[in-house]
Length: 97
Image 1 (cartoon, rainbow, N blue to C red):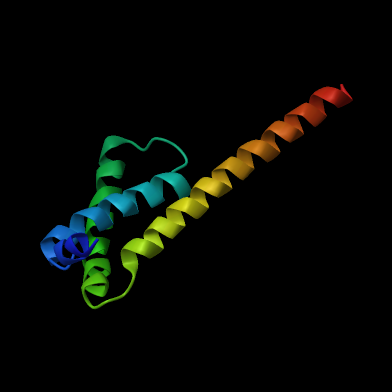
Image 2: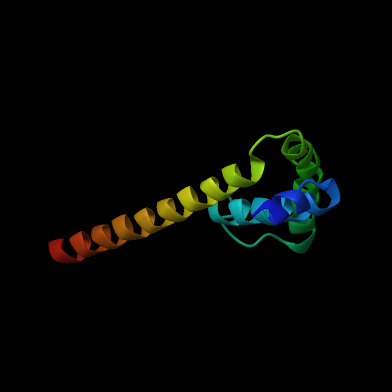
């Protein structure tokens, strides 16, 4: 674990896990459909630009990577909950007909 922490202290290396986690958070929480190619490229470019301040906060000691992992876990739980409630509503709708 100490080797990973030492490895992530380098801003050039820390940028990529933060960017990947940011993409996962975007896909789980905010992407509601496929965007056209240029719009998707713009979104990913803006996310890459937004990763620079997040990387700096990570270098200064803020828990950016653990916070993003927690956000991913919460978004996965929300997805499961939405699917469960949707299936319950569909069963209730079929029972009323």
